[in-house]
Image 1 (cartoon, one colour):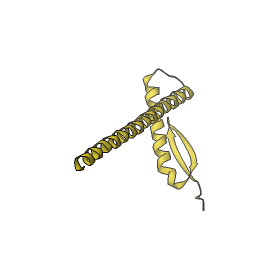
Image 2 (tube, one colour):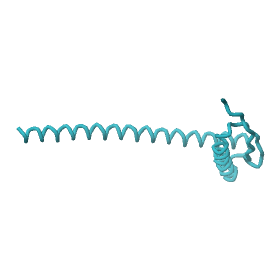
Image 3 (cartoon, one colour):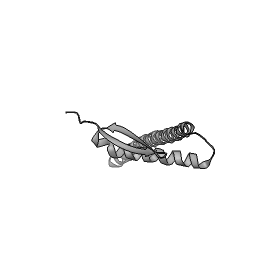
Image 4 (cartoon, helix red, strand yellow):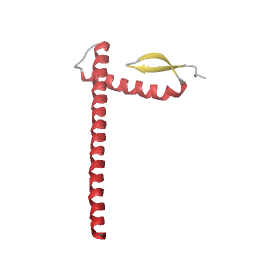
Length: 104
C-alpha cells in the first residue's frame, strides 16, 4: 500500500514553500531545503549575485558541481579498489606458486 503524501513546509530565503512528500522522506526533504537555503544565503550574502532567480540558479549549479565531483571521487575510489583487488590476486597467485615449488 502506498503511503499518502504529507505536506511539509520549508523555508528558503525567508519564503515558505509547502511541498508534498512521503512521510519517510520528510527529514530528507527538510535537510535538502536547509542545504539549499544555506547555499542561497551564502551566494546572496556575497553580494555578487542579485535576484532570487539568479541566486537559485547559482546555488543549483554549485550543488550540481559538488554532486558531480563526489560521483567522480566515488568512481575513482571504485576503480582503485578494483585495481588493488587485482594486485592482491596476483600476489596471492605468486605466493601460492612459490609455496607449491617449495613443497615439490
